[in-house]
Length: 327
Image (cartoon, rainbow, N blue to C red):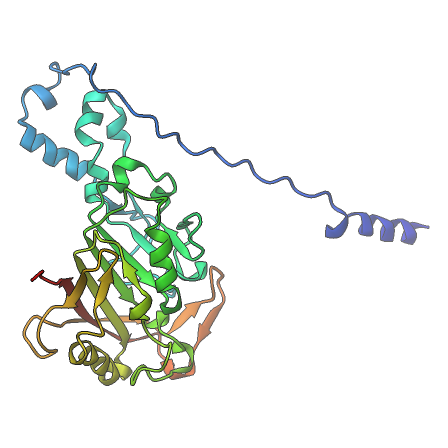
């Protein structure tokens, strides 16, 4: 009898028989309520407004509202996203903006001007954990601040940085710049193709010569008319530096093909006449991991062509496309 009761108790406590766990309550989005600054006090009792000139005060506000990397939460080295310039989660302390209406009136556009959001196109496992899905984009993940889509922030952004897996570039751009975000209109954009964003990097496939549907579908990509400058960072391992040079050279040999088209009919052309022209191609190197965590787990995976060390050399070639002058 005791054995029967124990077995029955085990069945009742099995995961299949437990009642479903109710989902955690989700906080409603912060309403985008306009703040009327017409009745704001002049705050003359504060030296910030009575003694400090506006030019100096603006610099103080700009520094106080500048995006910075949280020093207490650095990214792990063996992640797909840890790299120079992307060292950890970033944040903007906006408590200052809530002190009074006059401060709000003078600072409401500053977070957008100083904020250069990063977006990841592709699998969620290739983006930092704190990044959130951008609704209706299918493959786009952005900084948590993008969750609210505040007009003041979106309309002030001048530069965005995108890390796209190659298969997701076209759809990602189409969905990011759709009608639901009309205020997102940066004039500059940076694309970084990480080594792990290339097609079939896991099996060490050659990156040049180009194979059909194994690079950027230039004919089908349309940029928004706000983009005037596009910088592209092509990254790969040092073992592929000769092939990477061939990829870069291709951009100059077939300039008319490797141009970026905007929806208004104008196009962006690569800066410089050839890859050897001074300033046309920039290059930098860094030491990166040989192993990567699978998704957001702690499972590490090493690839045979990476060698047995903990780090290996990466090379980044940087090209810039600018708006072609009208005749």
